[in-house]
Image 1 (cartoon, rainbow, N blue to C red):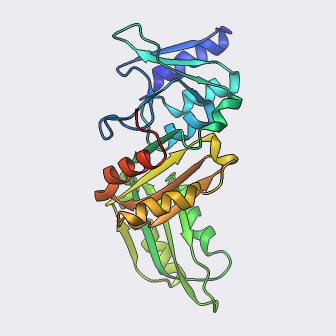
Image 2: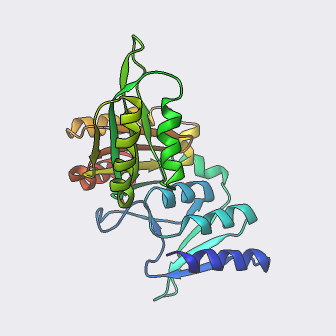
Image 3: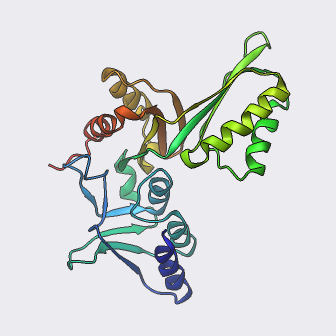
Length: 257
């Protein structure tokens, strides 16, 4: 999936083209999934960095590798509809005005599962053994949480993997847990990852606090958190996915007027 996107951008780069136009079944990139939020807006211009985050966090408009090519070779990408001539969305280098928008979009991904190893010894080398086993099996790990114990005893280690790999990951971790003399291994497939993305986060404070407050007020428990310069992701119960997306989309002023 996404091979045509990547091929198109790669060819545009090789030919030194002015633009690569991607014709698809949607008329552009939206502030969130219009199937969930009817008031989602089409984004006129979005930076490569923002689009790369969105693509990796669950947005399905462009394949991640195609955005990487565009960013590396500075190829403007125009995402537009195959069914009409209307202007679509442009993926371009970051522009000064883009930082004025704190959050550009909200996205979600239901394709993750969480693995937790209980009572892991809090000592050097433990994390290396856990993630070496997953690496050798070519299982991609996303979010990781490990709390250090205050007395140097045991702690819990949690991480997320693609749902397609959860059975194998759990089997591997049961073996590792036995070797480490840790506790049981638990798998949870009823989670989703909800994220807010925007280059404006670099120069604006309070985005995380606002996101967490909005979810708290709705009774949505945050199970894991990951951040970068331009994104904040949380893992929540899958049942609250659409509610969280709607609330955050409204809270950050992304609804169409």
